[in-house]
Length: 139
Image 1 (cartoon, rainbow, N blue to C red):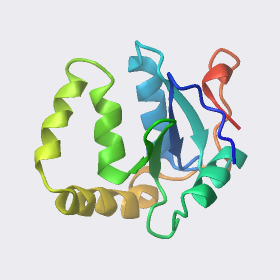
Image 2: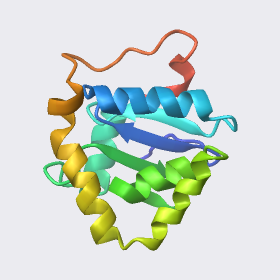
Image 3: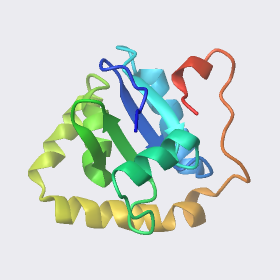
Image 4: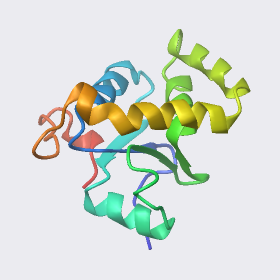
């Protein structure tokens, strides 16, 4: 399997129908001053390829994945914190939460993820990027 992500980029896979996830993607785009992130919905072809390649159980991990060509996959709170760390000050201060053991961070993450549709709503279809942003999205 070939995942076409340049070595200098990181791919954020997100739930394309989740309002919280879509708003988070918009936030990352706005603050990605180094232009290092690409995006794809979990429901896309590349999302499905990565899910299969890394044998990810989407019933347990269904909201955010961070794929880096050299390092593979991060998920849940680790993915969110690694993304925040790359967005510069003050967002990079979120890295302090790495001192919290993953089982605690992921319990909180899972609680939010489980309730995200109820709290933030859900779209009928994945978001369609504007022409200006199209180059940041992989299909």
